[in-house]
Length: 460
Image 1 (cartoon, one colour):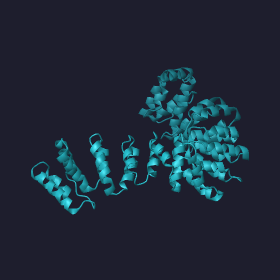
Image 2: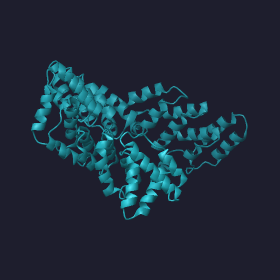
Image 3: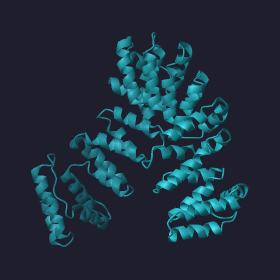
Image 4: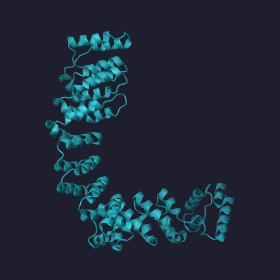
């Protein structure tokens, strides 16, 4: 379909050289120093038809052929032709760049605004290149798009763009309109930078629409937008305290930090805000859970146990992680329960909390967990959980499984894999006599050939 569209554009475009055009191009080539490149360009020109693939020739290795294609494409008016001219405007040959820029100038007319908007991202990319100064061209484009008669078309294209193109169009629209209605639309734009620019522009609005826009921004999905909106609201002559309370319960730690800083100066008690929140119904959204748990962690005041239990069963990973961070060190069963969660992030969060506990407190619960889940755990998780035990207790665990489990072959293989070329680690928990007994057992297994000699490193 795309090829058919380009073919139709070529059929409609007057790029079949007339005798006058052909003669002008032939004269131009005749003025060049005769060489293979010029002769090839003359051959292409002599054989030109309405079906000639000028976009393809514009990528030729031959600079004369590329310039010929640029001169021909400059006569067209299509999105494809403009895109190629923009590409060749950064050509390494100065003459080709000059011709391409002259062709682009022909598009800076009222009737070609739609084509300019279609190629706006590429045009802005050209302005960032180093082979020429295109600021004057960009100013012309901006002046064209800023005309009032093009406002509707520019606004229609604006929501479909991202990056620098959407930022430029917002600046053009804001200079011409700048109304609260436009800024409200900008706060719904997919590009977060546009939403941030809208918050900055809201400062120029009168008091009532300004505060309405900033309150709307406080519910935006972008953390940057919410944080900036909260700062501006706190600069108002009469700062709205409901916005500050909303910021204290924001899902973002950075927004909560801004709110906590202002709360001290506005006489708002964060602990009271937390108490009021936890006295009501439980949150039903992830952002609300993160806000309550985040404020609770920042103040060092735990949420009610019932809330924490619900958060630990949440389907959302971030909510679970926030709840895990609030668990007390003695909540071993809760930590171990989270090890079974499918999310690697939840697993690592629980693991990090368990690593801060003493080996002595972990020895029994972790050993019992491994008894139940050793074989069903994947290798990465099994090794991470096994490493929670003290070094010599890991060795004792494997030897005990060899003695007690019915499938001793499986456990001997596990011991062989674990002990081979492993060097002994620190272990203040295991008594010296027990370590010596375990080491002697390993020597016996090596002596009988059940373990390789490389396993001796684990007891040295």
